[in-house]
Image (cartoon, rainbow, N blue to C red; front, side):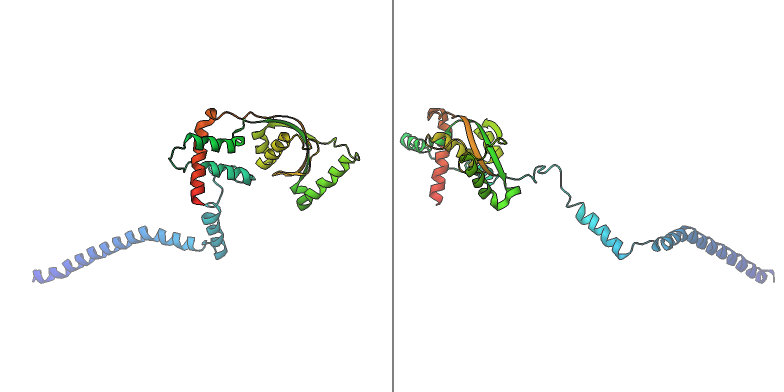
Length: 243
């Protein structure tokens, strides 16, 4: 009779153990999961609205990635002289030339035709009046011609003219290569008016120029610039063949 009475006790013990295990599992689940649930519930009330999200996307994806990079082209906003750029491109393309060696006569003929291009730097000292494109726009030439007429008629003394002195390459860098070429052409022409010349354009605007002194650079002999002349001849050959 004792044996049948022991089953309910065992069952009660097993039930108690199972209840304790369930309680432990539930307690562990509550302790580990409830904080994250509470945190999510708290955080979800602080989510940004649509406008804030769009502003964040604009800032992170566009503003920062499109910001200027200091290490690339710090002078990108500087005004470029188109003629100077053309000269640089021409110098780069001269690397793509024929390997054919010119005959001595071909080289001599080419040099005689182009020898002015090998002139060493000249030195200029001049005064100028600038009618800038920024100030006068499309009327710069007209304004310069009016002032020139007054100067030549003796009605105006150009006392506010700016003095400049430098080599031809420095002149080209500051005013543009076409302006430097015009000064050289005036200095080479004994019949040309040297002081308060006709209006002359530069990359800055329009100028009235008075050349006070010009020391022309010498033209070197063929032997002095032979390598350069050969390279230029080769480039000219490729250029002619491509036309």
